[in-house]
Image (cartoon, rainbow, N blue to C red):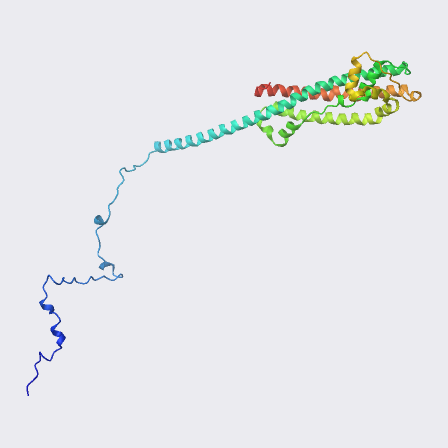
Amino acid sequence: MEEPDKNSAQDPDAEKQPNEDSATPSDTAPEEPPVTIPPVNNPEAIPQVPLENSMEVHHHTHSHGKKNWKSYIWEFLMLFLAVFCGFLAEYQLEHKIERDRAKELARSFYTELKNDSVTAGIKVQNRLKQEAALMYMIRYFQDSNLTSVPKQFAINFEYGISFLSPSQFEPRTIMLDQLRNSGSLRYFKNEEFQRLTGELTVAIKNIYHRQELENDNRQLYINPIVIRHYDYVFDAELKRDGKSIFEGLEEYERSDRFINFNLNNLDQVDRKGIVSVLYFFKENVVSSTRKTHIQKYIEVNTALLKILRSEFDLD
């Protein structure tokens, strides 16, 4: 029995597979050996790259030598000069702001004082006129005829005891209060100015207090005389055509016109009592306020205006 051919017994597809040994170098690329990665826990196995090949080392173009004491002193002086110049600039700016603010406040305060100075002068003149009118009435009530009184009596009666507002002085304190309450007085370095503002505050308080006493005395002593003996027909005649009592009396005083003035309740006139009241009111009330308190205000006001004109070049 014949043995089957070994070659014929093989897989028919074997003939179709190419022979690896017969492949030419141009047909198949040579295989590279596998790269072996050393374990991490073995640092000696990690290939070391020379430092010269991996990066460039940058060297400073200059080297710092050891500083001597002159260098330290020079750096200190430069730093000190910079800080000092900054401080000086800030100080100058702050000083300019304070100076501008002070001038603004000074101008407003100056206007207030100047206006009150004019008003105070007018009130002083009105008080002098009132005192003269009271003196005229004192002399007339002593021994003159009260049944038929002259024109001058009626005029002096009005100025002496009938009028109130012409002699009342009410100084404004808007800027003064602002300077004191807001701390703005610190902008004014003049010590005399600060002292005078304090005196002005006291003078104004005294004026208001004195005028309250005047009103109390008027209510208690003067108004009863006016109510009991004043001629209200004469008053109505002065106010004709819608004029105020002040306008009517001023016009009557300048004119040649005569209007009868008849004292009411003539049988109840107490000559001695009226003379005593009028003299007290003149000397201890009206005149005293003018000579002491209003005069003090005028003196302080004048001194403050002088300082403001000098310090801030105001007119």
